[in-house]
Length: 415
Ligand code: SAH
Ligand code: SF4
Image (cartoon, rainbow, N blue to C red):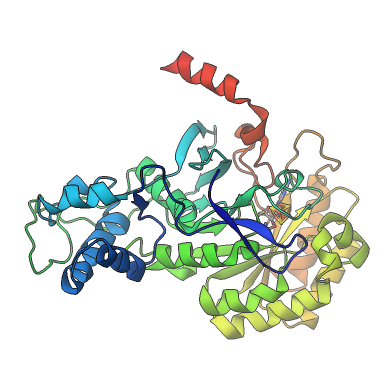
């Protein structure tokens, strides 16, 4: 078991088990992935380096970890050959363990991952013509029980650590072969780099966008999601712009302002219904934080963060939330709150045992037209990766449908 501690967070289930930022490993070494730069410097100091050395080495190591994606200290060529084993004795460079990697016929890729203490979670990569989006998980399971979401049928196992969250992005870069190669773009004082002189370019990347839309409610794991995304956005590391990151919440109002201030990424809000009885049923968090309150919090959000339009997600459930009246009410509400909004209509993705059906294509078109005519963009999101259960709301399937024994058998058969 991971060493967990109880953290109090606002929500239905409170407190929840939270993994510590440093989960002790059996061998006593510390995983550097997920730690903020000052923390790495501090640890180097505690391990015996003087101030100047700790500062310099932490800067170098950070660059190798997050800009170059190396997983061995031995690859850090501007760090002296005697220093590298010293680091390797005390620290490790972790990645989530890959249990299974699947490819959809539409190019979508899904990875079933595992934490060091044996919990499964998933991440999905969705390539498009002009972008590539990584869908990242924030928790193993979810405390909220949205009735149309497969993840919502799992209980919350635990929050993912910053390292496990940023580790998903790093693993995706590993798998896509997207770490820059060639000459480093800056030199250190005692640079002994022996790399090739080839320059690299950041253009033409496959992974261009990140959405916090995998398993879990990111605002119920606020600190870890913030720390992980700050690493993703760090200009000396992965350097992804906050404009290319979207955090999706089911409406955890008390954390939205902090999300704007401390993370500042784009916000997507899972609205899914425009009346209290329907939203209470399908997004039970609505009983705690209602629609009007949520839309007011959204109206306040861009002012705090200068974020662009808020995206509202709306899952299309047959005979539940998909009438013309619902569409008109949606337009009225968004106008009432004067929200610079875009509505993403998501065809419901089925999973075994789900109580809902997807709205018909005609119904979805009619709904979309009404919202468009109201002056709000309302594209229908094409489901991706349905054949490998990678589409929105389908995550859990792979993680739980196979037993460990089955997976071991499969692994043995393919090796
Ligand atoms: N917990 C966060 C983020 C993860 S879910 C949230 O709820 O916003 C990402 C999106 O997929 C959410 O809008 C969610 O409501 C939607 N979703 C969940 N189950 C779905 C399903 N079966 N079909 C289509 N979309 C679904
Ligand atoms: Fe949790 Fe989001 Fe699924 Fe609701 S839709 S159960 S908040 S993951």
